[in-house]
Image (tube, helix red, strand yellow):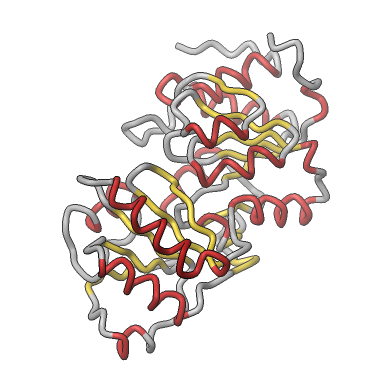
Length: 281
């Protein structure tokens, strides 16, 4: 088993993305994965999430896995504990939000303004209606007039979404980078989601905060991911692992690629790496 890998005893914390990494395509956390992660927790290995989702959308997963440490939400814009208490919150300045929306509108791209407990959109359609599939709040339609946008609270992030023509998101990305690349962190979580946070805010910044709060060194962390927004996190930690279905960028930053998320790749790896001997029924 991967003789080039460090000893399993080196690691104290496992950080995982959620969608298309821990969950299968039906967005289910399978029993074998639960058994493996619970057994590691019993062996004093910390388990936490680094996800683009909100706290509310993963509370059932937190309960199932009995996670009791800080977690990274909204791609690093929110750090919350298992009870939802906010430990760190970063927001996007309204003037940046307005400029992003102008670019999106120019290309007729659907956007979502994301807060901890609500999502605002210009139009409710097949793209923005996707929130329910991720257990996120139903979108609320608002006017995108500048005078209205100026009155909004600063959001944690913006998402640009396109289910039918995701190539359009690449054009939006290029324009945003050209206009305000230094002020934003922009990356794909999935092919259909372009996620926009303030510069310096990412899953990596979130994981650094969590590790510091726990007194854990980066070399004591294993991280799993699949998206471009996971890449830097995987490159930073002691053992960054991409799933087989991960993006090319994510795989290029990872030290190891394991099985597909639909085959419970992370759990299979951990079961072998820690010699747990748990049967996958």
